[in-house]
Image (cartoon, rainbow, N blue to C red):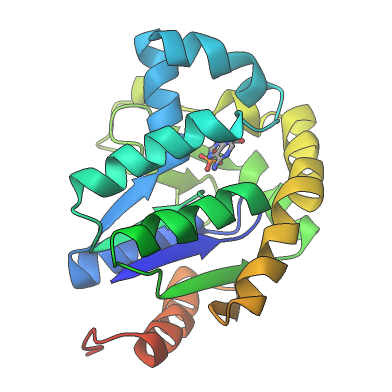
Length: 216
Ligand code: AMP
């Protein structure tokens, strides 16, 4: 099974990917997590991309493509969910060509639809565990009391000025890729608002249509 979770920042791609992982044992390839790890380690790639990420912009296409392709190869081109890749039409074209070349075509692109108000609320209240990457919402899903509060941080790019820049980047660079996937017959639009479990039910309904996975 080869899926993309698509949508603006704060659409719930990470949360829904983890639920799919738990349910089906698929692996999540999150280019955002790979990039943040590179920045944390201070690797040459991390140094190159840090300013783009903190300003709410995109990392250059070819750098992200290499990260994503390497990770898909490690997974033998199957049983993964891409979270946050592709984010431009160019990346989308590359992704389809890459997987086709390995005879493992992409099966579905699940696009989570969320209004701007909900995105701003989710991102400004988002906190993450800097070790596990687990994501929380201060009101709806607060960090559990047994987790060391020092591990719970706000992502730099969740600061208000970055959030607005990221939404703008999404509209300009990422949203057009949706049209490409629609034309390829892969796009499934899902209402991404409401409770996590309700959204997951909708995701499962769409996955069922596209895949051999047994939805219990
Ligand atoms: P995310 O965790 O998916 O919100 O990604 C965090 C940041 O990493 C984004 O705002 C971008 O700066 C960068 N990034 C992640 N994935 C991509 C991608 N596919 N293309 C370009 N930049 C990316």
